[in-house]
Image (tube, rainbow, N blue to C red; front, side, top):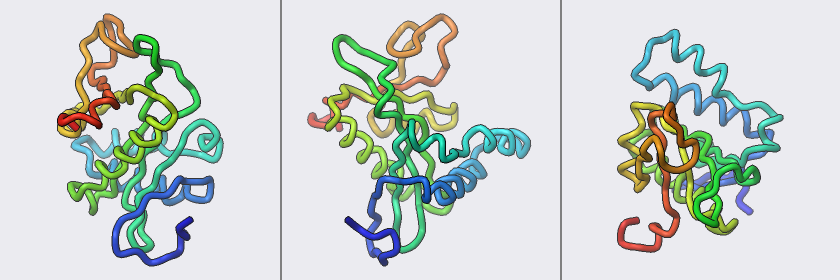
Length: 176
Protein backbone atom coordinates (compact mmCIF):
# COMPACT_ATOMS: atom_id res chain seq x y z
CA UNK A 1 0.00 0.00 0.00
CA UNK A 2 1.24 3.46 -0.82
CA UNK A 3 1.58 5.85 2.09
CA UNK A 4 -0.42 9.07 2.00
CA UNK A 5 2.72 10.89 3.13
CA UNK A 6 5.10 9.66 0.41
CA UNK A 7 6.47 11.93 -2.32
CA UNK A 8 5.21 11.11 -5.79
CA UNK A 9 6.39 12.14 -9.23
CA UNK A 10 3.25 10.79 -10.95
CA UNK A 11 -0.35 11.04 -9.81
CA UNK A 12 -1.56 8.05 -7.81
CA UNK A 13 -5.01 7.05 -6.65
CA UNK A 14 -5.99 6.00 -3.17
CA UNK A 15 -9.28 5.02 -1.61
CA UNK A 16 -10.34 7.78 0.74
CA UNK A 17 -11.11 7.33 4.41
CA UNK A 18 -12.76 9.64 6.95
CA UNK A 19 -9.41 11.30 7.67
CA UNK A 20 -9.29 12.42 4.02
CA UNK A 21 -12.54 14.41 4.21
CA UNK A 22 -10.80 17.79 4.73
CA UNK A 23 -8.81 17.21 1.50
CA UNK A 24 -11.96 16.01 -0.30
CA UNK A 25 -13.94 19.07 0.75
CA UNK A 26 -11.06 21.41 -0.13
CA UNK A 27 -10.95 20.01 -3.67
CA UNK A 28 -14.73 20.40 -3.94
CA UNK A 29 -14.44 24.02 -2.79
CA UNK A 30 -11.80 24.92 -5.37
CA UNK A 31 -13.64 23.03 -8.13
CA UNK A 32 -16.93 24.80 -7.38
CA UNK A 33 -15.13 28.15 -7.47
CA UNK A 34 -14.41 27.50 -11.16
CA UNK A 35 -18.09 26.97 -12.01
CA UNK A 36 -19.68 29.50 -14.36
CA UNK A 37 -22.24 30.50 -11.72
CA UNK A 38 -22.95 33.38 -9.36
CA UNK A 39 -21.04 33.63 -6.10
CA UNK A 40 -24.30 33.08 -4.20
CA UNK A 41 -25.05 29.86 -6.05
CA UNK A 42 -21.51 28.61 -5.45
CA UNK A 43 -21.81 29.39 -1.74
CA UNK A 44 -25.16 27.60 -1.47
CA UNK A 45 -23.91 24.61 -3.48
CA UNK A 46 -20.92 24.06 -1.21
CA UNK A 47 -23.20 23.40 1.77
CA UNK A 48 -24.87 20.55 -0.09
CA UNK A 49 -21.75 19.20 -1.81
CA UNK A 50 -19.35 18.88 1.13
CA UNK A 51 -19.12 15.39 2.63
CA UNK A 52 -19.17 14.39 6.31
CA UNK A 53 -17.95 11.34 8.19
CA UNK A 54 -21.44 9.83 7.85
CA UNK A 55 -21.02 9.83 4.07
CA UNK A 56 -17.98 7.54 4.28
CA UNK A 57 -20.27 4.62 5.09
CA UNK A 58 -22.42 5.17 1.96
CA UNK A 59 -19.91 6.32 -0.64
CA UNK A 60 -16.50 5.30 -1.86
CA UNK A 61 -14.02 8.12 -2.36
CA UNK A 62 -11.16 7.84 -4.85
CA UNK A 63 -8.55 10.54 -4.45
CA UNK A 64 -5.84 11.49 -6.91
CA UNK A 65 -2.64 12.66 -5.25
CA UNK A 66 0.59 14.02 -6.62
CA UNK A 67 3.31 14.79 -4.09
CA UNK A 68 1.37 15.91 -1.03
CA UNK A 69 -1.49 17.55 -2.92
CA UNK A 70 -4.93 16.10 -3.52
CA UNK A 71 -5.68 16.99 -7.14
CA UNK A 72 -9.15 15.53 -7.44
CA UNK A 73 -11.79 13.21 -6.06
CA UNK A 74 -14.44 10.89 -7.50
CA UNK A 75 -17.29 9.80 -5.27
CA UNK A 76 -19.49 6.86 -6.16
CA UNK A 77 -22.04 4.64 -4.47
CA UNK A 78 -21.00 0.98 -4.80
CA UNK A 79 -23.35 -0.63 -2.26
CA UNK A 80 -26.76 0.92 -2.92
CA UNK A 81 -27.82 -0.57 -6.23
CA UNK A 82 -30.91 1.47 -6.98
CA UNK A 83 -30.65 1.35 -10.75
CA UNK A 84 -30.94 -1.63 -13.03
CA UNK A 85 -30.59 -2.00 -16.76
CA UNK A 86 -31.83 -5.23 -18.29
CA UNK A 87 -30.57 -7.83 -15.80
CA UNK A 88 -27.54 -5.89 -14.61
CA UNK A 89 -27.02 -3.06 -12.16
CA UNK A 90 -25.73 0.43 -12.73
CA UNK A 91 -23.73 2.35 -10.12
CA UNK A 92 -24.23 6.02 -9.34
CA UNK A 93 -21.32 8.43 -9.76
CA UNK A 94 -22.15 10.93 -7.06
CA UNK A 95 -19.48 13.49 -7.83
CA UNK A 96 -16.31 14.20 -9.79
CA UNK A 97 -14.26 17.18 -8.69
CA UNK A 98 -10.83 18.37 -9.78
CA UNK A 99 -8.93 21.15 -8.05
CA UNK A 100 -9.23 24.30 -10.14
CA UNK A 101 -5.45 24.49 -10.77
CA UNK A 102 -5.34 20.91 -12.07
CA UNK A 103 -8.32 20.89 -14.42
CA UNK A 104 -7.78 19.89 -18.05
CA UNK A 105 -4.71 17.81 -17.16
CA UNK A 106 -6.29 14.32 -17.24
CA UNK A 107 -7.03 14.07 -13.52
CA UNK A 108 -10.79 13.64 -14.04
CA UNK A 109 -10.24 10.92 -16.63
CA UNK A 110 -7.81 9.12 -14.33
CA UNK A 111 -10.37 9.21 -11.51
CA UNK A 112 -13.19 8.02 -13.79
CA UNK A 113 -11.03 5.15 -15.04
CA UNK A 114 -10.49 4.16 -11.40
CA UNK A 115 -14.23 4.21 -10.70
CA UNK A 116 -14.94 2.24 -13.88
CA UNK A 117 -12.39 -0.42 -12.94
CA UNK A 118 -13.73 -0.75 -9.40
CA UNK A 119 -17.32 -0.92 -10.68
CA UNK A 120 -16.44 -3.63 -13.20
CA UNK A 121 -14.85 -5.69 -10.42
CA UNK A 122 -18.17 -5.48 -8.58
CA UNK A 123 -20.04 -6.59 -11.74
CA UNK A 124 -21.73 -3.30 -12.52
CA UNK A 125 -22.62 -2.93 -16.18
CA UNK A 126 -22.52 0.84 -16.21
CA UNK A 127 -22.08 4.12 -14.38
CA UNK A 128 -24.90 6.65 -14.17
CA UNK A 129 -24.35 10.36 -13.48
CA UNK A 130 -26.55 13.43 -13.11
CA UNK A 131 -24.25 16.16 -14.39
CA UNK A 132 -24.35 19.90 -14.12
CA UNK A 133 -25.20 21.68 -17.38
CA UNK A 134 -21.67 23.03 -17.81
CA UNK A 135 -20.06 19.60 -17.35
CA UNK A 136 -22.30 17.76 -19.83
CA UNK A 137 -19.81 18.11 -22.69
CA UNK A 138 -17.05 16.66 -20.49
CA UNK A 139 -19.02 13.49 -19.80
CA UNK A 140 -19.77 13.11 -23.50
CA UNK A 141 -16.07 13.60 -24.26
CA UNK A 142 -15.03 10.75 -21.92
CA UNK A 143 -17.52 8.25 -23.34
CA UNK A 144 -20.75 8.79 -21.47
CA UNK A 145 -23.95 9.00 -23.48
CA UNK A 146 -26.75 11.40 -22.64
CA UNK A 147 -30.04 9.72 -21.83
CA UNK A 148 -33.39 10.83 -23.18
CA UNK A 149 -36.15 11.62 -20.68
CA UNK A 150 -37.64 8.14 -21.12
CA UNK A 151 -34.33 6.25 -20.91
CA UNK A 152 -32.37 4.69 -18.12
CA UNK A 153 -32.27 5.37 -14.40
CA UNK A 154 -34.40 8.24 -13.18
CA UNK A 155 -36.45 8.24 -16.40
CA UNK A 156 -39.62 10.33 -16.25
CA UNK A 157 -41.33 13.20 -17.98
CA UNK A 158 -39.54 15.58 -15.63
CA UNK A 159 -36.21 13.73 -15.58
CA UNK A 160 -33.07 15.53 -14.50
CA UNK A 161 -31.96 17.24 -17.73
CA UNK A 162 -28.32 16.15 -17.85
CA UNK A 163 -28.29 12.42 -17.16
CA UNK A 164 -25.52 10.26 -18.61
CA UNK A 165 -24.69 6.59 -18.71
CA UNK A 166 -21.35 4.94 -19.37
CA UNK A 167 -21.58 1.37 -20.58
CA UNK A 168 -18.61 -0.33 -18.98
CA UNK A 169 -18.41 -2.88 -21.79
CA UNK A 170 -17.41 0.05 -24.03
CA UNK A 171 -14.14 0.28 -22.07
CA UNK A 172 -13.06 -2.91 -23.82
CA UNK A 173 -13.98 -1.80 -27.32
CA UNK A 174 -12.51 0.81 -29.64
CA UNK A 175 -15.01 3.35 -28.28
CA UNK A 176 -13.23 3.60 -24.95
